[in-house]
Each structure stands twice: as C-alpha cells, then as structure tokens.
Image 1 (spheres, rainbow, N blue to C red):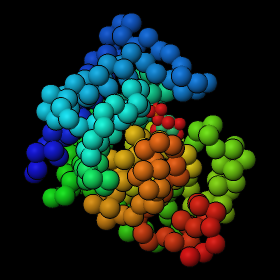
Image 2 (image 1 turned 90 degrees about the horizontal axis):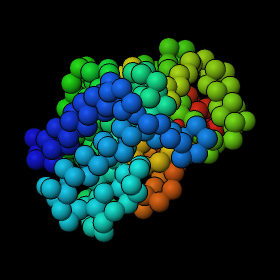
Image 3 (image 1 turned 180 degrees about the vertical axis):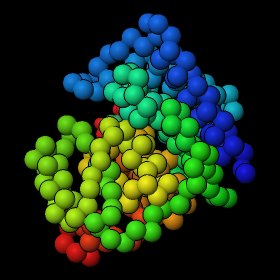
Length: 257
Ligand code: LIP
C-alpha cells in the first residue's frame, strides 16, 4: 500500500473516533447553522482541525479544501475533506454519517477514503488498489430495474419540483429510491453493491471526491464536472454500477443513451 493511502486510512479512523467521542461528551456538540437546514457542530470543526493538522505535519506544502475551513494553501497537491458528512444525522445520534478524505495531485483525484464509523465500514482506493473493511467492495451486477435501488441526495440548491420529478421517473422505471441525507452513505452503498445508482444535482466536492476515486476502483462508473469547476462550486454527481443505462437515463432526465 502506498504511504498516502495508508495515511488517509489511518487519519479517517482517527477522525471518526474523535467525532464519536465528541458526540458522546455531554455538551460536546454546540450545534450551529450555516444556512437553514445546513448544520455545523463543534465536532465538525474539531475533526476538520485534526485532519488539517495531521496533513500539515506530514505534507506541509500541500493545500487543503475542507467543508468548514474552505481552501487553504496553493499547491499541485490538494487534500479534500468533509470531516463529518451527514451532520444533520450525526448530531441526532443517527448512524448515517461519514468521514471523507481525498487527494488530488496535478489536477487528478488519486486517493480517497470513506469511513462510516457507526456502521463499521471503510473503503479506500489509490493507484495501487482498493481496500475494504467491514464488507466486500464491488459494484452490483443487477441489470433489472425492478430489483434496483437508487440513492438520491438533495439540498435546497435543487428545485423541489425537479427532485420530485426525478423520484417519479425512478418509480416509473420500476426501481426504488432511498435518501439517507449523507452522500457518503449513498456512495458507499454503490461501492459495496448494495445500491445501483447514486445521484445528486448540486453536491460539493468535499462530499464526493473520495467516492470519485473509489467507485471506479470497485468496478463502477462516475460522472461529475471537471475538477477545476468542482473545486469552486457544487456540481451534479452520478455514480453507478454500469449495468442499468435506461435507469441512469431516467435518474438524470436524459433520453435513452
Ligand atoms: C450533506 C451531503 C448531502 C447533501 C446535503 C449536505 P453535510 O453533507 O452529504 O448529500 O444533500 O445537502 O451537503 O453538509 O452533512 O456534510
């Protein structure tokens, strides 16, 4: 295993444990809201500080883009992290949240880890392979839409009517949909073969950068904006197993490919 992959796996585990410890500490969360429904807790801030500090200690000239602290540094190597993805679930003691850390080098995403601490699931990928803990990684082979699951993400950045229409197209295609409130949970489902598609219309890079590396390593396909665009604005993200083109077209509102 290369040293960057080993580093982010260890760091994700440490970050997840800190988040769980802070949530279990009376008064440890101090919840705030960046916008209606967009929460931040003291744990989000503390975990991102930990991630930034560990990266700075090992790779001091690298840049870091984090959900809470934004982009800091100017380098060809950029670490991209959501310290607690699914904060609205995390702060209520629900299990659907995760730590996401990725690395982009020379404009390409090269490493990623997703860790779901309350589920005991970790997946990671780098140039030399795929790592999975808690379950086997590999996308689904299902090719019948009536047996397929689509995970959706939603934020107020998408028109409710557009999201409702997407749900209608999925149901009309004969598939079922789920919405966990954390991109890492839905993307983990695709990586582990527990769902066939993940889609979100306006998703920040820190929520999905790790999955954009891991899904292809698990045999799946991803579509997203160029990294230079995604670094500065939320973009549409699609991840899928590659065996349901009609369903993917319905999810995205496209004519059959
Ligand atoms: C969340 C994402 C989710 C998206 C939410 C929010 P957070 O991340 O995981 O997919 O729909 O708007 O961005 O803010 O909980 O880290």
